[in-house]
Image (cartoon, rainbow, N blue to C red; front, side, top):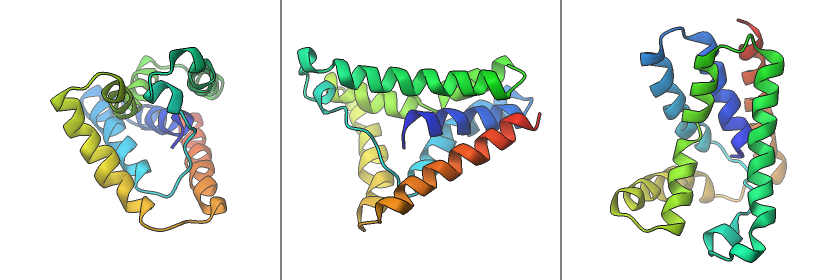
Length: 151
């Protein structure tokens, strides 16, 4: 999924739970939950291939996606710090995967094996129509905004 969906889902968890000891781990697990559903992802192949001179569009996509999530959280919420912390925690698995593609590490490789190899593997087994791959993300974003706004 794109960062926007993960961050809003994490923020929605933070909006509903006052206890950071519950909210932060659930926001992290929420990332893996969303990745079970068919979804689209934007390409960051230049970053993964260490083609730094060509990577600026990849970095721009990630930055704009991240920024849009922060703006939506700011706009629809009462700006509780826990919501922002949960939004950031919710994207940690993708961060680990990205770091592992640039710097090889046994722990990060084990995580990538679970995240990319097993969780994403479930949805990559079938060719889901693009409509459903986009619809799951739109649904996650809309539901998350509803829960962020309900505090």
